[in-house]
Image 1 (cartoon, one colour):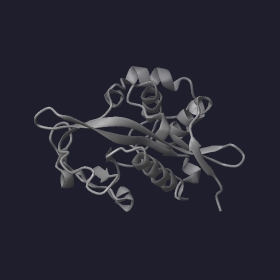
Image 2 (tube, helix red, strand yellow):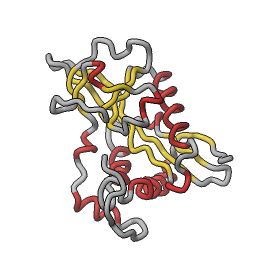
Image 3 (tube, rainbow, N blue to C red):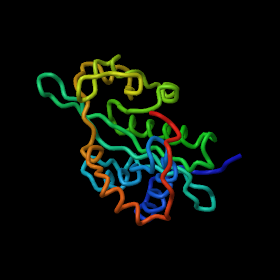
Image 4 (cartoon, rainbow, N blue to C red):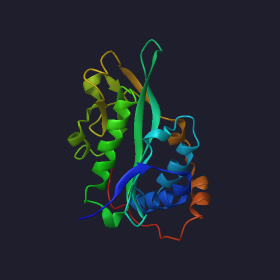
Length: 204
């Protein structure tokens, strides 16, 4: 049985976690990936929530996975802004996937987010995976993407009963998600071991 503990990520972990994020997403949805740069930029952003940045670590000190949260918002038709959370990247080293690490990180961090008083979490994720944690299509709450759309991969979760009641409008995530130019991704990638880009393994 795989043994690990969950703890907050430390600054000394950042490079190792960026590398495991790269390993997790490499050639998954596109040739190469940009999620490791996203993790790096989110930590530097005002939206970053360090209290909800967790790693799964073996007794020997090897980091197997990470979940990272940032503050997002839902903007109502009248311009009122409601603070929400978004997690991602959620990363688990490929050789340790399908052993419960990702689920443990999600459940633990959602519990901590609720304890801290946040109202809800909004994500883009696999609709076959995240409903097991209580996520529903965001349309259920009257929440759309920034361009007014809804689809199964756009999901929301209340962190307490009816905590998203009265919160509806257009979703906006942290600016770091929109600021990943390829030249910057390529430059950042030079700090990691060389890897060959290939055809995407999954369509998201």
